Image 1 (cartoon, rainbow, N blue to C red):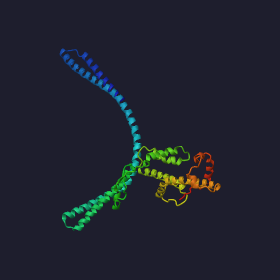
Image 2: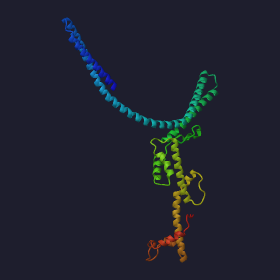
Image 3: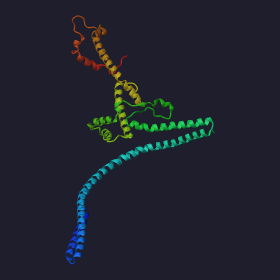
Image 4: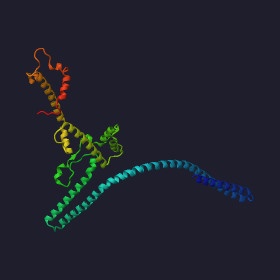
Length: 354
């Protein structure tokens, strides 16, 4: 821009010199009157042309000065845009790598679909040809038609198998059916949308990070869950599977702990499904143990009374209030609490009575 300004200034100086030269020539040529008038007219024409050029140069000089400020502003904006583009480009490259990895898994199946689509077209063309020419028997026509129907069904199944993982990952409804090429599983083609709130991995991962954050001896667990909660993009399928697998393991450990405490004896479930089924009976098992613990304590207390008073009838003591002015049994609860604690220590644990 400074070079342009220098050139414009130089042009202006040249015009001024030309104007001065013309004035000197006008002063010298004073001889004949006719020549003077011609020369004066010519000089006026040249002076007018020079004035116009000077005005044009001044206008362009002002425009170039305004343009210099605009160019500098544009340069600053261009530098800022370049910096933003550099940061966006790095993020885009990372996302592109992840997308390429996921698309590679679908590429093979898409090629298979394309191949099967070609086979379907060939089968359909064959059926149309046989029908037009009417040269084949009815059996051959039926065979070609059945082959086309089977191929169409197989393509539909392949497409569903490709679409179902995306629907599951997106958290929407999906099909219970996973085998689309076997008609036996057709009744499972209804939509399924799990209502379990714990299937929401966003909440589960956030709860896990919060739980392990303050535990100094759980650095591995804290690091594992942090890789899912800090993501600013939707989790890909492989990361969601890893998170679900870890939740599956933790829930299995929790259920196993409860089952081992409630069922001290007897066979233990050797599968996750069997563990879930036994865990579902934990509430009724706890209720039964609470009732039976009360029975065991009462049995030991009545046996102690029987040892001192052999004529005592346990059913009468348990159901009837004392005769006369004696106090009811509830009156003595505070006095017998210490003895009840001693009897509790003598009771058998986890005894189930028929």
